[in-house]
Amino acid sequence: MIRFSQVNKWYDREHHVLKHISLEVKAGEVVVVCGPSGSGKSTLIRTINQLEPVEEGEIWIGDVQVNNPRTNINRVRENVGFVFQHFNLYPHLSVLENITLAPMQVKKLSRAAAEERAIALLIKVGLAHKKDAYPANLSGGQQQRVAIARGLAMEPKVMLFDEPTSALDPEMIGEVLKVMQDLAESGMTMMVVTHEMGFAREVADRVLFLDHGEILEDTTPEAFFTNPQHDRARQFLKQVLAPMHG
Amino acid sequence: MDFSPIVPALPSLWEGMLLTLKLLAFSVIGGVALGTVLALARLSSNKVLSLLAGFYVNYFRSIPLLLVITWFYFVVPFIIGWITGTNQPIGAFTSCLVAFMMFEAAYYCEIVRAGIQAISRGQVNAAYALGMTYGQTMRLIILPQAFRKMTPLLLQQSIILFQDTSLVYAVGLMDFLNSARSQGDITGNLHEFLLFAGLIYFIISFGASTLVKRLQKRLTV
Image 1 (cartoon, rainbow over the protein chains, first blue to last red):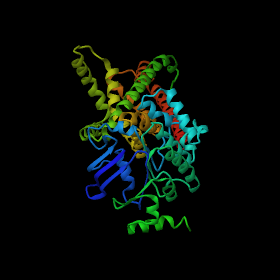
Image 2 (image 1 turned 135 degrees about the vertical axis):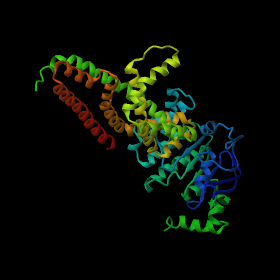
Image 3 (image 1 turned 90 degrees about the vertical axis):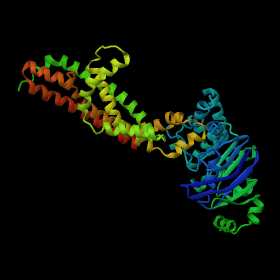
């Protein structure tokens, strides 16, 4: 489904942020990407829909090479949902309009069809009663659930999550993770950058550990948590797990 | 001081005010539209486009409006005649309108540009991530938010333009100020008419400015 082949990326031609990334994610797989801040994990998933360009290598989704200049990147992005750390809902549009805008504009769905789909998704994320509210009047957790619904409204083949719970108050993290877990169980192909190790343990099929732009671990959650191969992964786990277990 | 001749002159003063307002309205609409295009060009990743727009803005901001008005009075009919192949005079109103639009566009451009830059990069990314094009992103996501933020500044600039429209006296247009002056000349009460015109300009500009400030407060809350 998603394939990286020898991908390299530099910032300002000197800071090597992604180093020789090769990786394959199968359809239906849920992959958690973790690592210390600055490790390149957000950059990694942003290259999949080319919010970040890469200098070397190939990135494929299905049989389309996304970093080929001849590829119409907008057609690729239609099929790749992306959820941001800071939600990025459109503040001047209602919840319903946030969700229906792209299906109507990009996929040329009729308003009726787009609204029907939006309301079904809002029911799924438990926010049907907020359809006429504006983002400013929602809590962070509610905004993020709307953002997930907005991504799903395009009926994507892949969903990418860039630290979806990092900007949330602790009591709202659970509601967003629950929506993501339901989505994973429905068979969606997902890549999730997160520090939520509970989610990784319970929901992920695979865990990637990045540090300094390299994939150091690429394994099952059990293996990652019980027997990490690299020192840096062990240190990282110690740090992120410590506060949870007191 | 004798203000009584003003009363019979009110119809012609009103005619003048209508011309002023018409000139203002069209100039604002055209100026904001052109200014928005210039702002998008200035922010464009296309270096040539951005340099050209930057040159336009800096050029028009560095020359006096009166110069543009008189210059366009002579040049615009010539250009239009050259394009359409006819030799019909287009009149002072049209040439003034073009002059105001193009001059004000430089100022509106800078306001709109700041407005666009004030919208977070995340909004653009969110639109792109859903497969929207640059045009859709600007039209549906960025510009509506930018204009909401920038409306008070655009209105303030338009109030300045309202006062500047009086410069059309240079090419003989009968706007509000010019008709007040000519009525004053006719009746021999020039001072009274000019005082009256000043009062009207003050009431409109100050009133509008107060309303804009109130709007600004409401938008920031």
